[in-house]
Image 1 (cartoon, rainbow, N blue to C red):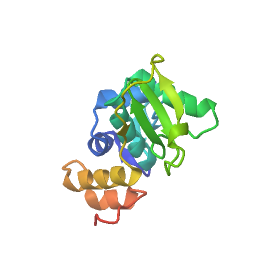
Image 2 (image 1 turned 120 degrees about the vertical axis):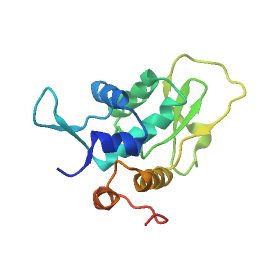
Image 3 (image 1 turned 180 degrees about the horizontal axis):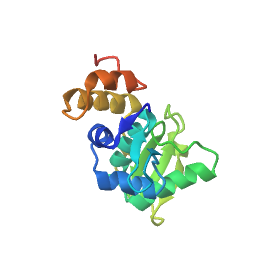
Image 4 (image 1 turned 45 degrees about the vertical axis):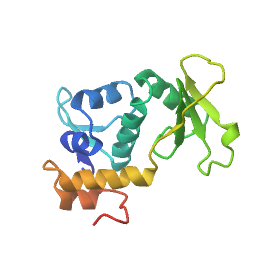
Length: 164
């Protein structure tokens, strides 16, 4: 079993057990489950740890329902549903998908909205780049009392340049 236990996922993603349960029920992040069906051993892949961190950041700016709408939009419109490799911008209650190089900034794609609002003064909130998330997870793992850092280094799929 290659991956991270529930406790390791909680520590690395800086989340709670109840949030992981919600993400599983909502089918946003579904871990591998082994053994007893009532209380299975749960294993999260590296990519799922990144996804949980992105969802955590997105949920600071918008509702869980909007996060689910974003994922559903991506799935039904031919995108891969991973949020970790997307550039998302939140403006009021709307979420926009922006090209990775920002070259088409005026032509962003709205992917979720509670209700339509007129144009006005907006504040752009850009989510951390993937490399920042990877670096933060490595730093968290290094400081954690739950994570065996040597084991973590073998299991993590991405390694930041500035973390040993």
